[in-house]
Every structure is written in structure tokens, then in C-alpha cells.
Image 1 (tube, each protein chain N blue to C red):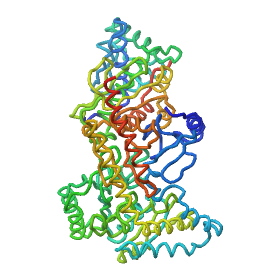
Image 2 (cartoon, rainbow over the protein chains, first blue to last red):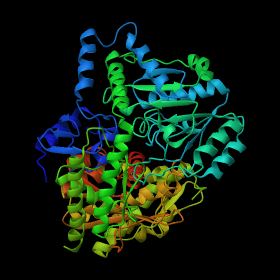
Image 3 (spheres, each protein chain N blue to C red):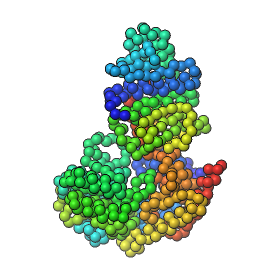
Image 4 (tube, chains in turn green, orange):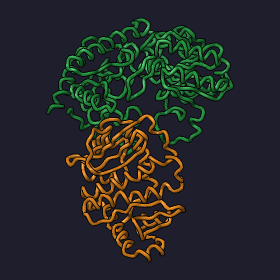
Length: 410
Length: 230
């Protein structure tokens, strides 16, 4: 086991002043609490150092927020320059216009853009825009899909009243027949269908869209006058430079981005078609620091890097090296192991391991050698992962697959 | 699972917790009465085979305050059975004393808590559909170094059951208390669902989303259903 005194001490301090110590998706309870560190000290490129000085090769990239690597010099330089001018003012900085122009130029269907801080801010806003535009109350989503922390969609249980979900209908991902029934039974009542580009639920293998999924989704939306909202918060930047809809070949009416957009600086964006411009102006949108110029500069620089270095293709390629290497190593040790989902955001799955014991064991062993593989969430590749770090991770995984067998026979 | 009168869930859960605790006491000492409760047609619950019948509110009061008046007629017609039941109830309350936190106590209070939880899981309208993603499941509760303390199971028909006898089979998810003191504290006052695994007080392995949901229901049950005071 790695040393973890500082992590544990900090956690005990946190527990006294923060309910649960650490909460949300980064809560230790959601991962491997005694194998992963609780606190990070600093990070560079594809690695981070925890508060006990342990070095890790990271395959979570700040749960997707880091696309170009931690502490990227060009992004940090741009951030420092903006910070000298200031961050939040009475008025937006000119960089807001520049960022909106960049997004409208990059995303083929986008005619406008607005900004906030987190994915949830804008997934919730987007469905309200759809309601305003259509005058309809209902929203359809895929069961188990994560769209944020608001009560219409959060994965928790507490603080909810039945009304919170009274206007939300669900279908199983890829079950087009069920979706079609929902749409036809509620025609002229469904404002929006909100979907992620593929189904990336936690604690379960990722599901790619079936062959005709997106084409039929578009047809259903057109037939019933329902707006298609793409929640590209998690995937944005890792599948296609121009938005994940391009990777799968469809066109939404609205799309929401966050995570990788600012390479670790808090920003989210919603883009939409011109037909939704007026409706968007009717739905109030603001936040204390939402005009933060620093994060907007980070997003601009991040988008520039993504274009210049063709990052979406690069991370898909790097991910292919990782996923193929891991699957090959698993096969060598007789493990029925598969990396599901796109290669830039793979989710590991041992066949028949619905109760997750095997993946937990595998990730524990890898953690002992400093590889940060999460057992319950899709991983993230970033532009800072190089062949060397990936090769090293595969070597560690190879030993882990072998050790799993040894531990079973011991 | 539907149709259970919602206003009777708390007293029924309390009555089932008495059953759970008395079952383990009987297993261990061989002399305690198993106080199987019966839900009577109006707001009354029979505790044990005969002699002890409480109104719903009186039962909760009896657990919470250590005394409450049962119905007189059954008590007077079956005095010996009623006294035995009351003796078992009195002995039961001692297991909730943290100063006596032996592993025997842990099994008693765990089983009592699990029986309470089972009532909520099977009958509480708020939790209908919460477990629709799950099928045949086994959740085990263990004490590090000593092994299993008890279990909760869900059948493919969605019926929950609890027990303390040893079971074969692989659990869907397993919760292990790192020592007796932590177990006692967790069972009596609840587990910090975010902090306890991070600090190493509790280890959860396996299907976390199932334990997450079980934990949520158990915290509500723990908040609402009284446990014996000393």
C-alpha cells in the first residue's frame, strides 16, 4: 500500500467541516477509498502527485476536465495574461465574444452560444429553452443517463419531491421502439429529447448507439416537433473537434459542453440553432462569476490547441493503443475483459462481473503501482498521454491480470 | 408489496425489529421467546404468540421510553406468556447498551435493524421502483476478523428478507465493519455514507449502487423507527 498519512489526516479535518469530507463524483466512497488518494497536491501532463508524494499516471484527467494535460504551458500562459487584466468585471470581457464566435465557427449547426460554469447549469437551461420554444412540458431522457445535479435528473435520492420528475419520461438506451411509443403517446407534449452521444452510465459498460439510432432519433424528433438536445458535456472534444454529433452523424438543435472545454477552468457553453435564439433570450440565465474572463481565455486557447493538434483524433488513437493493449494482456491471462465505449473514453468491463468485484480488484492492484484506473466510471484519455505512459500502464495491467489469478488461488 | 397501510409502516417496522432481535437471542441463549408480531385489523399489534397486544402508538412508546401499557384483557387472560414476552423485551434493550458491545449484541441489533429495513423496502410507497434495476441479490454485513454478522436478500420477485444464519453464495455487495466499536456506533447511529469508507472504518466491496440505495432507505428507517432506550 502507498503511504497515505497526509491524505487521511486531511480527510479527517475535512470531515469536521465538510459533510462527508468530500462529496459528489470525487467522493472517495465512489471509487477505491483505501487505494486512491483523497487529495491531490499538484499535476503535470498526464500525471499527478498526491499529498503524500505518491506519483500517479492518470487515466481520469480530472474526470474529463483535462484534455490537453494538466498545467498546459500555453493555456497557463494565456490564463496568466488575462488574470493580470482581471477576471470578473461589471461587464463581460471581449473574450466572451471571441469565444462565442469560435464556437459558432467550429460547430456546424450553431448560430449562437451562451456560457455558464458547469454542465448542469446549461442542461437544465437548455430544456427550459426547448419548453419555451415549443410551449410543451415534457422531456425525454435515457434511463440511467447523467445530465447533472438538478432534481429532474440527478442520480441521488435525497431532497426530491415527486413533482421533480413528473415531467420526465425515460426509455432504455437504444430501445427505439420504446422511444417511439413514448413520442407517439405524448405527441405535442414533449418539448425535448435530451441525450448523450453514446450511453456512458457509471457502474455499467458503455453502450454505443445502434446502427440506425441517431437517424431514427432525428426522424422521431422531426415527426413530433420535439427539440433534440445533445448533452456533450462529457464527450465534447474527445470524439470530434466540431462536437460529438459529427462523430455519429446527426444534428441536434441545442448542445451543451463543459468538462474539457476549459482544460480545468470552470466553464460550460450551450450552442443552438438560430430558430432557438428568441426562446433562449426568454429564459433567464446568469451566475455570479459566469462572465469570468480567465476561464473563457482558457477555453479559447484549449479550442485552438484542439484544432491545431487535431486532439480528438489523437486521443481516439492513443485510446486505441491503450484499449487494445489491455484487452490483449487480459486475453493472455484468460480474462474475459473488454474496454467498452469509444477509445478516448473507455469503460473497463469483465464479462459476468455485474457485481464489480473483479474490476475493483484489478483497479486496486493497478493503483498499488501508481496507475489511476477507476473501477466505476469511464476513463479519459488526454493529449498528454504518450505511447510511453500508455505502454507502462499496459505493463502494470498485465501484471495485475496475472496477480488477480494468483490472489484467487492463494 | 402494495396496499400496506402507510400509517402503520413505522409501528410494524418496530414490531418486526423486536422479532429480529428476539430471533437472534433465541438462537444464542435457547431460552428467549421469539416474539413474532401479528398485525391486527385495527391499529393494534400483537407481540409474541399471546398475551401482549399494543396499540400502534403504545408499542412505539414502549420501545422509546421503556414502558407503555399493553391491552389489559389479553394480558390478564395470558399472564405467564405476557410476562415472558416482557422479560425478553427487557433483556433485549440491554443489547443496545454500547458499554456491553459484544459481538453477540451486534448480531442482535443488526438483525433488529435489518428487519426494520425489510419492512421499509417491502412496503414503503416511496421506495417502489427504487430497486427495479436489481434482481436476485444478497447483501452481507461482516465484522472484520470475525466474519458474517447478517444478511439481506432480494428475490427476483422483489421481496426482501433478512437473516443472521450463515449463508452460502456470493454476495452482490458486502459491507465490513473494521472493528466492533465502529459496528456498534454504525448500527445504532448510522454510518456516514461518504466518510466511513474513506476513513477505512467501513469497507464496501461489490455492487455499490445497490448498497447506496439500501443505505438511503436504511437511514430513513433509522430516523423514523425508535430503538429501545435503556
